[in-house]
Image (cartoon, rainbow, N blue to C red):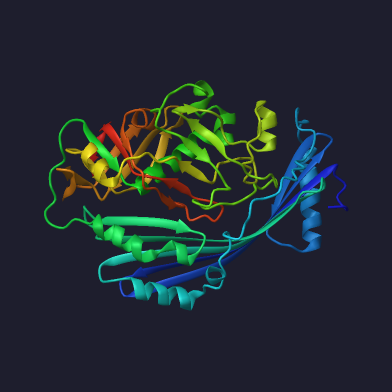
Length: 422
């Protein structure tokens, strides 16, 4: 960076080994993929430019710096952005971020693990990552971290009423795949498929389904780019209670109960940030550049490129046990998982999804399986009509990333609309 002609220069180094293992009938498929990315950002006379390259050769990095400078010269100076971050906040202890056993996992060991776990008619998936992340800039930021992460999913039955469960962890020991498989089995229903109840019904969402809804809410409403473009409902509803007061959504990359990661890709130390407090949205996720554009405080959520996003979400749990959650939604339906989830109207957070593993809730227990459903609804409406919030969260990286995951319990909604049989 001392050779860069720009006023200020930043380098972000990402070196990742991804692995995926899954069973296909009697065969177990394993794939591994190494990946390296270097992100270069410069500030030159108040103008910002960036470039991405897949090589670490010094000559290529020099070329990337020149390309970033060329891009900056085509832009206007950015008001409110005097320099790159210079955060020297000590990081929290990181001993629980890296698992040597997971880092050494190869194709043969992954295949043996799945062969030991799977049973007939059960499908299992394992995704893992071993990554090294570094952020350096010309203002003295020096952040480096080795991190591992794994996600395990289990599915029993392809027909309606199939059981599915998932979880993520920084280590193989804490992942506990046997418990995930047992959770999927407990959600599986055999026997005939019943008829969909008529009219409006209550719904109990599994923790995994709740996580999927939070993931799309995060991307559609709380990302920097959605707020900047005006598609986020936060533009009209910051500090306005639009959700049930039991909804408290926090991002915290320092909390070991999730998948922690201590700094963002500007090298700023992460801290707890309330995105929703007692039903009121408080802030979008912002890096330094987006914060300068919008005139809002940065929140240490840089992810590289032109966006910022919360990566370590916690829907704070309630005090209702799983047995009590079933009683609260008695007479309604259970939704085990969501597929093909999309937000087709971001300003109202209207979503469309295929609901799988649907079952009746009868006398406080999971009952007869129901057909797979097409569900269309608004999360502004759904998250404002809660019956109860569970006390037992699941941690899951639904997109199998290594920077973080979402922690959430089950969620009971008083009435869901827009249900149709697929």
